[in-house]
Amino acid sequence: MSNVAILTARVKALRDAADEADGHAQACRSAARRIHGITAALSGVSVDTGAMRSKSVRVERAKTKADGAAGTVRSTRAALDGMTGELQAIARKYDHKADTARADLRVAKSQLEAALLEGTG
Image 1 (cartoon, rainbow, N blue to C red):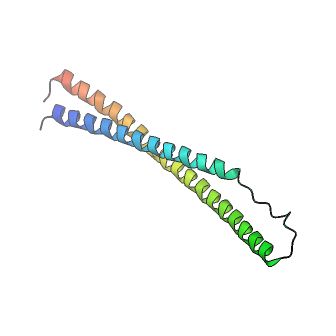
Image 2: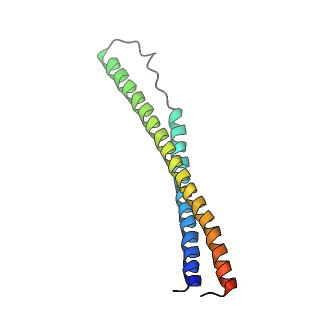
């Protein structure tokens, strides 16, 4: 395989790698935005059992269930916040991979241009 053919293949592979990493980063950000929307909706959920003053068993049972639901909402929101953070961190890693591939691509393009000017291949 000639030097030009090798460099041409490298340029194509690096371009594909950068595009793929950009796509993954965008997908992570998109998922993080959707999850953030759910988290924002959950932030509007509140359960106040303070007005439930009766000492009846039914009211106590309802109060316990309501408090449990409030705890579930809080823990779900915290888990979703964690997922959003993880997706954003993954997106940053893919951004770094794409930047690295683009830097390597610039070098490979220069090498290909020089090889074409030299007439090697």
